[in-house]
Image 1 (cartoon, one colour):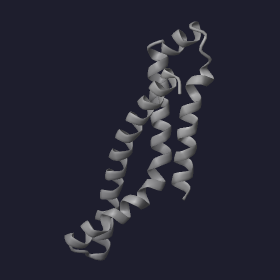
Image 2: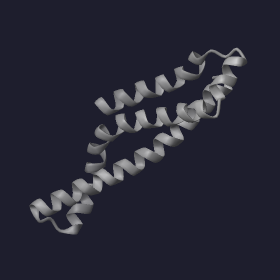
Image 3: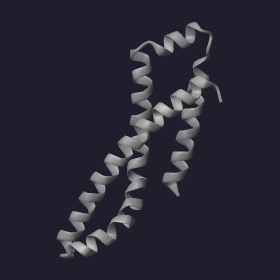
Image 4: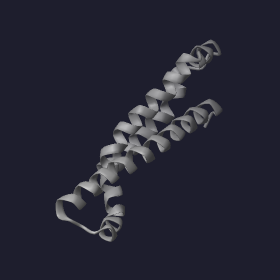
Length: 113
């Protein structure tokens, strides 16, 4: 894998992991508190529900977080003129995009399963 493709993939993954963690925890806490209030569950049961809720929330948060990570990565690269520099070096934009497309494909299959 070329160095620039690895760089873009790592930048996208850093953003994805950060945003995914925050979104999953936030949604998981909202769902857990909603279930606890509706059914009157004690805190011990709510804590035991957390792993199941984490898996359930991934299918909702992963596509949006992936979109945010890709937009943030390529937006930052465009704002700092990295894409223009790559084009001036003769590197096609497709060489930068394909690793992120493969990551998005894996994420979409993972969230559908």
